[in-house]
Image (cartoon, rainbow, N blue to C red; front, side, top):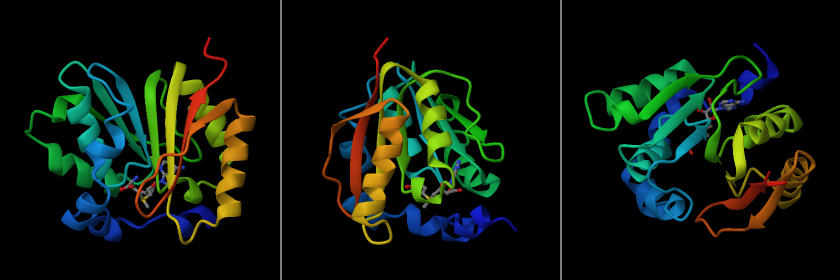
Length: 188
Ligand SMILES: C[S@@+](CC[C@H](N)C(=O)[O-])C[C@H]1O[C@@H](n2cnc3c(N)ncnc32)[C@H](O)[C@@H]1O
């Protein structure tokens, strides 16, 4: 087993990531509504069981698309079973990340990385890849858990993102979180 797999949130904890209490504390529509419009193509990287992917699919509407990406097949299966047969199913593309990469070739307007960056062993490579997937002027929202990611570690993450060409434009307040919104620069 690699070091990385030791630190990835296991599928057996998926239930703690999608429940009514979390929805109340971290309302996905309220958190993401300001950044997602109908018709957009958006990415939920490290989507887990899809707590945010589902809200993203509602926000992009019929004409939009969500790429829900995770390195664990088991997490994607959880999301798949939630959307099967619903109007959201055709809007969500499930993507199994290949080892060490996100591996999405589409260009996206917005990317979300919620509670996952601290599980990524090579953040420099990760942010280079995320930047390459964003459309000009595209946004990425990074949200990390407040307790096991220190202030210093979070600032280091922002530094890695800056070095990759992502500029911080806001520090949204999200309950139980450290968060930063970044824009792809130059917005060519
Ligand atoms: C703590 S869970 C958070 C899930 C979801 N974002 C949420 O907030 O409910 C972290 C997820 O990120 C995934 N993950 C970790 N590293 C990843 C990587 N390099 N690429 C894709 N997914 C990754 C894990 O498999 C896990 O499902």
